[in-house]
Length: 628
Image (cartoon, rainbow, N blue to C red; front, side, top):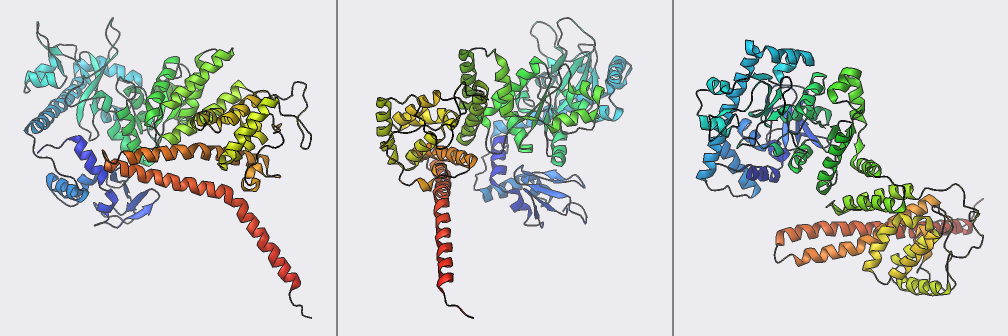
């Protein structure tokens, strides 16, 4: 019976690893993981860890490592299929019926591994032979220690089109072609793919050789410097990361995964003692590879050369990752000094310089901002508007709505600070002082009438009316929330005139100024100004602005949550399971929303209650019986 990798991954995801292991081994909570004395060898100090998030156990003492299926086979002693069936029953999954074609494919992959493993041994032998003298000289010039050469399995492919065929004569020609070792032609004899190259094995998560990479010796016109195996039944370059089988265990000690551009960079880092590095194989980082990295660590560090090509590669990775972002999962970016790759940097400045860069990576958001800021000259309003449009286009690619909202706010804050820098002077106008009368900028009778009508409608919603008045009192915050408010106004026509007026009025103020927009007499006030900190006299300005920002967030979030709940409910007929799960998630968010709103308006009430209680206690104390 052949089980697909996708089915096995689903099985692993449905079973909690720690719950299976703790049936026979006593586990203790250690942060986000579990620890225990290793059940595979005798020890007094716990070195055995279990990570439900990453889906594996590992012993730093004896090296035992595996997933929930491996636990059942190694610790329980069950045959593979018995282990799978027991776990599937626990997870409520049905084991697929036998598929003869899938069995044949699995058998073929197993036989192709025999080819690649044999080829690896042959390449290593060729490196040690007389034919490999030039390759050994090249490796010596790179300064790689002998231990590194052995660990990474360096070999050599002779400059002969039929050498490998002769060396692997016990394998059929068809298997050599299908494994990617030979190239098939119709008109002439098949020939070896790799010739006169230093060879490196590419291994899967289990350490099996599934493909090769080769670096040409010397320079040849029209010949690629690096050459990788083609995609085969064993090897998919978009789903494989070079050195993942070594870097995975190393990352559990460092809680870090470094992604560099090529396998020679990985080896240079390993030679310097940095063992938690991987590399893609001739392609930009794919969605599958990003997901694989996130199974190891929450924030992999991407390390790129400091030249223009490296910056473009960083942005390709950022844009590829934006739609995939979810809470707690991100990428961090390191840009090397211009003209240096990791090997150059370590040679010139030592391992410490590399570690310093890796310890101070940039966030995805900052990388995106810096790249777009430098993308084009920004000497005109049109160019600045183009910058804003590009930033928002990136934001719109983010699928998680919470992360999307946070990216939008932070990038717009950066844009506002850049496009509308705070001025030290007021261009001839005196800054407003509390108590000094000042007319609302540009307040015509018609505008006053419109604002009064709009705010009257807004007051019916309580929170919406409070936000309108809060922005009028703190107009320096209007631009910060302009995009969010404009989109909200499109959904709520009763607030649209008030928001439009505030946006227009704010443009007549010095940017960043704190002069309030004085509203005309007779304007409908919020139901109770004491409920909101940003409307109360004497509130600390920073606290008022923070409270106003939270109120704007709540104002926009409420209709979005209601709409999402309606959509989830409408999906019940076609997707009851998915709709129920989505509805439960949204209900939790709505409860959190109500809690946040309650905290905002309840703080003042609680304070007032405490004051009343204190007053009553004092009064009782002063009027109570006295004793000598």
